[in-house]
Image (cartoon, rainbow, N blue to C red; front, side, top):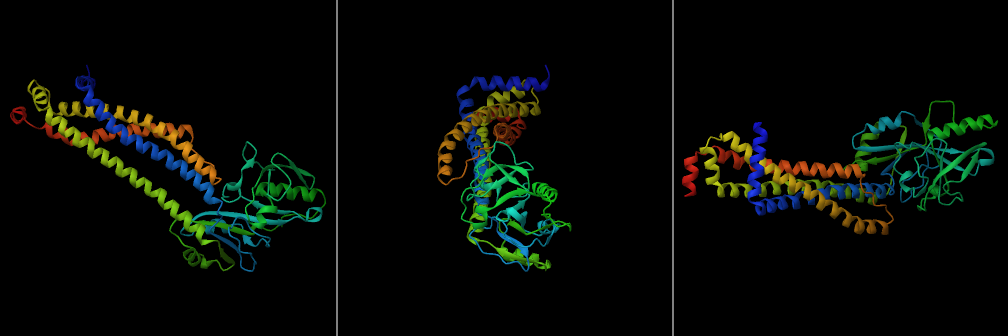
Length: 401
């Protein structure tokens, strides 16, 4: 039999002789890893849900052309009717500034002719964090080129069709009331859809929607990283002489940054919980090995090498704590189901969807917790195992007497 398999077999036999002790040690690890598993999944769910809710608070600031006139609103959600004058490469240049988390370019287009009463706002779905976060009533698919999103004050519903310049645009979704005037009456499309409408406008004999000049934007919505202030951004953006910076409601930014810091602190608490579990396992194994001095001394006396004894002890620790990790994942899954009902009800009251991670992510998190539990057992038992394995058999027997 291979030595590694022999050590595992000896570990299983030793654990089977004291099932009550093995069960209690496994449950000790199960409680710690189960709590960490539940905390990891719920933290991700709360972060996903709060990201949606916090995105609805709007951007931290708006970058517009220097000569543009803007009306301050409680939340910066979209650009207003200004002449597109920001260079097409400006979003990338702004994104490289220190403290910038997200930059979402938008362009306001005044529709000519029979569509002159329409307000059209083009945005980049990949970088947007304000428009799509408000979507509640929408189609069961992703936003595609040719789709349009309508504001709350419009009559269309998701699934309807709007005709612009002879082109039919499916209504992908409808926004709820936000309290921001331009957000309520506008049509929102991607930049790809705007290019399609520009083509359609020219084919129908109307004036083009886009200038032949290089692409430009009406404004940039900017979200800052936690701990970074608008004043620091103004200082960093002073090199851009052609822009003006309009800040939003600072209370919204403070709430978002505070919640982000709170969620980050949960990681520290989880690490402290794992550390305390490791120390507890080390203390338990130290006491167990001291109790088994005579048994271990006899193993050394009949020819088991100290290195082999250490391997047997570590195999016992790994098997015990791995079983506890699996039980902890089961306990954690039950805790997640219980918390989903209570937290889901709370988030529903504040009109925010409670978004659990994907099932595959939860499964991988449970597997990771079981592996972490096994690592906790090895880390907790390595020092006691090394000490007991390097003692002389005579010394162990004499200490036992």
